[in-house]
Image (tube, rainbow, N blue to C red; front, side, top):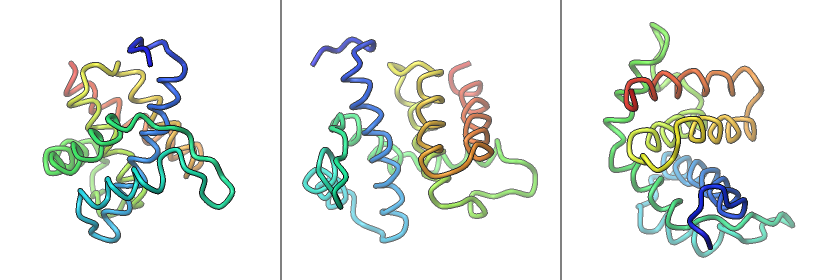
Length: 154
């Protein structure tokens, strides 16, 4: 597979990896699954598999692994950045658990994946938000990640 960022197959594989990463992070938060077991479960049973008659897209496995393990390794730093961007009186604990994982994964990419343009990272996680939420929540993701990007990418 070409390393060109304009490769549509790679783009689709990264989009699938982002969605799967959010799902994996959600599962970890709910079930406290150990990282190695979590990654293995997704590699074996989710990424590119057919589940309940729905074919999951092939995901870029290394990218998936990096986002999931990176969010977990840097969660305190990420949560600090996100908390600073929430409206006064709001806490991460008040956020929907799926929303929190979307924001964490997006913030991780903005902090640690300089190879991913800011606009790409934000729009990809807005798209992930659309898979779970309405337009209002997708706009919330856009606003929070845009604010994080201004801090971490200047």
